[in-house]
Amino acid sequence: MPNIKAAVKWVRQSEKRTLRNLDAKTRLKTLFKKAKSANDPAVTSSVEAQFDKAAGKGIIHPNKAARKKARLARALSKQSKT
Image 1: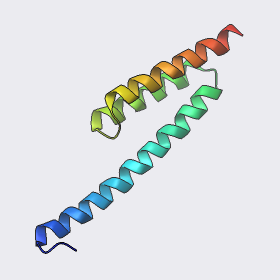
Image 2 (image 1 turned 120 degrees about the vertical axis):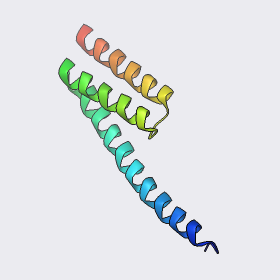
Image 3 (image 1 turned 30 degrees about the vertical axis):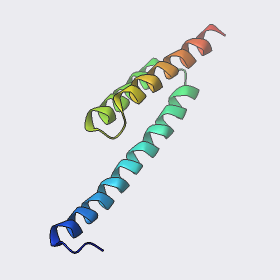
């Protein structure tokens, strides 16, 4: 337990942010799986926008967002060829 009063608040804020970020990451994983199974360009663009938004807010790293978007596009192009 911190001795400094402000540090107690930092701990509370960190816990809240951690929970919020974890929820967002979990939601992104679910969206990615649903978009990968659905063969719809509208859903794909929506999911890509969500990844960009999360990267912009610092929830995930920008390179991770780019990697996920690329993998999603590759999976969908593979589905459309078969």
